[in-house]
Amino acid sequence: MSIEKLIKQCKKQDLKSQEKLYQLFSHKLFSVSLKYSRNYAEAEDNLQDAFITIFKKINQFNFKGSFEGWMKRIVINTALQRYRKQHVFEIVNEENIEQPEVEINEENTPLNFLLQIIQELPDRYRMVFNLYALDGYSHKEIAETMGISIGTSKSNLARARAILKRKIEESQKKNNVQSV
Image (tube, rainbow, N blue to C red; front, side, top):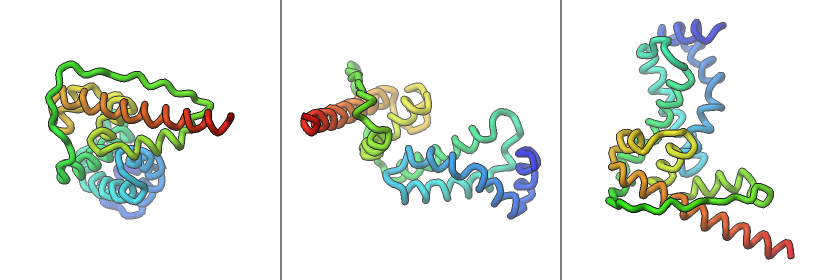
């Protein structure tokens, strides 16, 4: 069955088609959810909530643009809504924000370590970092999406980078000491 036909069946609230759609996209969308969640369990909750929204709003998808991109936006917005309700976004007004450069020694810094330290970032920093660095949002788009100022977005990104840089440097020092 083609994606287009599957979507049309989902619009008719066909449960088997909804299950098939979930099976096709849940793995990819879970990795998106995981980027915006504190942990695995929260990512599962966010993904579940996102699929409920996808099935409720599937009639709004008009076959213009990528269906996967449309679903990805819903997953991201679902995670952001959870954090908005928890009031985790700190409003900061800073003009001259230093953007630390993070240098990664790829041989000594495994991907799972990077994902772990990104997930350990405070919520507001992790959200901005993911939107900006991993999903290519501009600070203006982040500000609009999260209901914060552009300056706050820049500040939160700078702070996220500083934390990541410190943790990477600590890890690299620890690895250098162990290898001596």
